[in-house]
Image 1 (tube, rainbow, N blue to C red):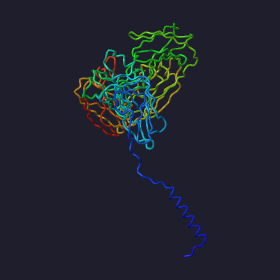
Image 2 (image 1 turned 45 degrees about the horizontal axis):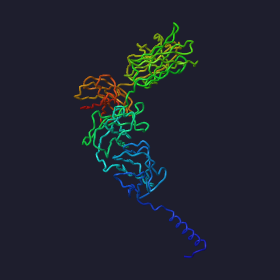
Image 3 (image 1 turned 180 degrees about the vertical axis):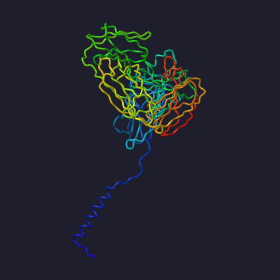
Image 4 (image 1 turned 180 degrees about the horizontal axis):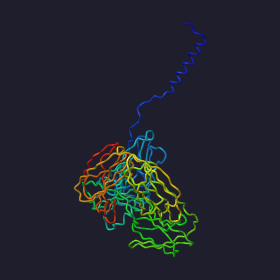
Length: 532
């Protein structure tokens, strides 16, 4: 075979390219999955008679601290947080500079949780603790348990678990003022493990601590507690709920939302709150008071008149307050009307129209409903207690259509504004388009039950209140997936009641059915829920 000059040059170039390609290709290899390993600590872990101001902890590779503020738990808590490095960079050691005055004869735990990770793959050194004692021995008692939130099915995370020592300084108000004696955190679990404790009697509480100050603030925190005194040592493990308390009633100064509309913000239980207008009013004066759904807001709607300010009194039992608001707004809200469904009216639903302002007059003679044969349909109306929703009830037939004709001036609001013409068409489905769920509730509990049917987003779809265990029927449901939740209504209030720390009252028990229900059209599901 003869080699030309061009062939020779081609081979040289090919060889150079292939060599470069080989040099640049990745070699691969197993992924690092080994977490950092502790090499040594100065002073040693579990040092006694500790008097140092600085601690150094060495590892076998470069590490970094991830989410340290969220995961580090120091027990007992310190008034002045220590300086811990590195932050934002990698290092082979951690430095802890103690700024607080340490208590005598006390075991301290620096629980880093899962915050220590290697620099490359972020493999976690799980639940790493540095422990020392300012006394002659290391306290070694433990307390374990778990926390749950009865209002949600999912597991809750990052809950602080605290022990307050029963001593001469203890009062029930200590949790509102001081940090606990011992502290742990559930991190990514529902379980807690308090370690290096000394013997004695304690109050055990749990906090969903909104601002991480380790002090209970009822306005923003959730709390859980064990009623009985915890005596250490113990072999018991504690499981208890966490909940949001209802704060004491407080009504805030009112604000003018628009002309003829005053809003009162409040916190606490405002049921049966009495609101009285003290300002003198004209003879034709109208007003409506209602609560805004899902908001801690009370609305005072009124027919406007010439005045610079309004004076009110609010009262409930022992609570009383005088409040006033200056009037500056000259714009009245325009009436807006919305129907409860866009096209399909389900057989068990009641059709309604809602308004953004209270309704004070309804002329039902201006409402007409025609069926698919253009025949008039009889109906009756109910105005809601809040005065902003008008229910129009009639006998619905399956696989039918209905035409609604709501003429002008059918409804008149607080400002004497009336609706324009409304025309719309609604249809109904057949019974075969729906499914039914029959739940056999079995229990020996001597209490009432609130059985709730939820969708997969925990939105309430239906509910049934029963006095005794029985079969509960949820009929004519749309196909889909559902959850079932049962509240043990111990005080027969017809709703779930939360707990109270000062009254040592736990929240009412909520139990979830152990599986998600898949309902098909023209299908019946029969399930049994046993509550012991």
